[in-house]
Amino acid sequence: MTNRQRFQLRVPDSQSVARNMSTRASGSNSSFRSQRYTNAGGYYQGRWLHGQHHGYGIKATGRGLIYEGQWLGGQRHGYGTLRRLGPNGHAQRIYVGQWSADVRCGEGKQDYENGDVYYGQWLGNVRHGRGIQWQPDGSIYVGEWLKDAMHGRGALCSANGNRYVGEFANGCKSGRGIYYHQQEEGQSVPQHGLWSDNMCRASLLPIKSAKRNL
Image (cartoon, rainbow, N blue to C red; front, top):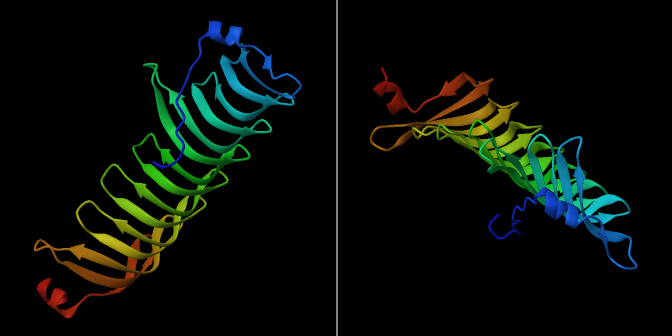
């Protein structure tokens, strides 16, 4: 994401909004203007075309959400950043990446309120495709997603060094996979098995490891 274009958040005050109302380019249907939504408490500042947000613009809602980026026919479309304005007046980033027809679609990064961070592919406003998710407890998932859940081939690594590499379904370890148990001496013991809903139903451990655990 470092090589992508970054947008600088600009929040105009009411006086600047009023001064910039409806500045139209001569001989064109396209214009740049600001508009306040007094009933909802929001505003839009940016490009317009045929009465709709079109091109680059910033829109804030009365609920504290601020979108800055590209628009197409009144919808978020292209590359943009969604932020939430906090009680302290600072805007916290929620999502930065690609949009299509007003929803997350393509490649993007999402910061969740519980501390999770996801970077990868989106479709229809949900995680879908390949992506990486970091969790506050130190665990990391790298792999495939389907309809906002871990689904397909992937690897789930825990902060203690244990990791599972294999198949997932509906957010759980399901199917064939290998669970690597991290040992104190720095080596890992592989456990080959069949999984269902995060439970190992059948498995095979190396003979030496099995004797050691007797």
